[in-house]
Length: 106
Image (cartoon, rainbow, N blue to C red):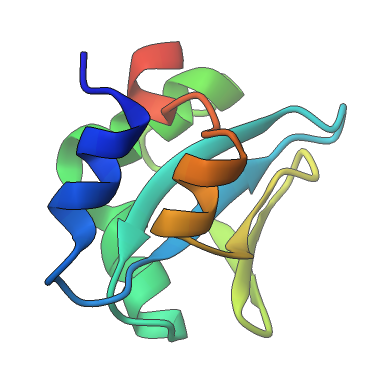
């Protein structure tokens, strides 16, 4: 397990990465991914990654063929769960407290 300082040091010369979070109707938040692309396409690519996508569906108890609606720069599932950019960078998340990773929570 890396310390906070070691994690920050690894980011030192890399591109800024933006946090994508999943927020359940109950308010629980999970980290979906960090991406250098702060666009809907970057969000969609992060969610479509095979293992991550399956973990999201398992957490939501949805079938493999579940769909989500686009809502501006976010995805909304039928149960009210939203996947969106949190407004934090990876550096902000490390300093302010990281969210539990969606794949390890499923």
